[in-house]
Image 1 (cartoon, one colour):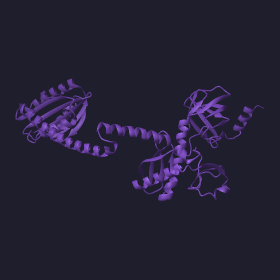
Image 2 (cartoon, helix red, strand yellow):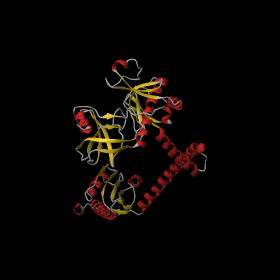
Image 3 (cartoon, one colour):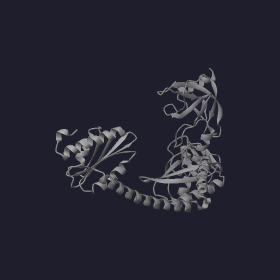
Length: 426
């Protein structure tokens, strides 16, 4: 019986795929032997290899990416029922041997972040007495770890970060080994293992002992650096966001480029940037306050001009105006000014991005309801809105031509109300 056929029968009988990332996480290329392929519901294919260095999603760590031959591996997961590692590709592959290649940059990021998480978790226990209850390792976005209780202060976070980076510089060995259930009780684990057999220990020599099936660097120096970015509160947990290794270096590069660019634009040195930014923010707030006051004055003056040039319909001063590019906020502000003027009935229409904004205004002595007037006009544009007797607002689809038509409809409506001719109302 041939080797491939024999391996295939062993797998069918329930034997596990030989997973080699446990013993050599730095192996990124290897010769692969396909022993099974099957279609997946989404049209892709699952591939089983005789032996694999690909890491499947699990233990809070993302899966590897890579290639089988020239086919992209887009997912890797464990088939729990058969204890097999499934490599997901987008097409059927030729049977037999092929070259497999793991995305080494992604794998190394995961190794840096996963070992950094162990180190940070150790430091949180050592310095603050806070246990890690879960973690998510991702080399593309910040990784996270969740603390069981408490909310570390900024000073405490910096203390933990400083301690972790000191231990990185110590370049301590990171060991991995399997122990039996009988042996595990003699190991000072940070938390109990989730499995009862094939218990794999990741040890940062002499410091931290964790039951873990992830990939890790060989020495703490391989992490490079770790940086805590922020925290967030999640019910009874605190989530710590962090980056490590090459991802931390990239973040430093991009952050430094942004800060240096801002400093250059403001003609200050990098250390003076915070003070310069605060000064600029204070100036901006003052300018915004002054601009708001000027805009309020301008709107008051505009409302007065609209009132002075308003049509007279009976005892009312009727303001009808359509504006291109005017916001609802501006229309409301104009309306609030107009409703204070005697005898005013106003219809203001603004057009922005093929949408109409409509504000109706009735002074207390106008004898009309702004809400009633609005609802009557909204029928012409199949719009929605509402308000009270003095000011109402709404909107619907339309352009400047529609706005002008709506103004004419408002004129007819108000004329009919002014001279008590309901048969003329639209």
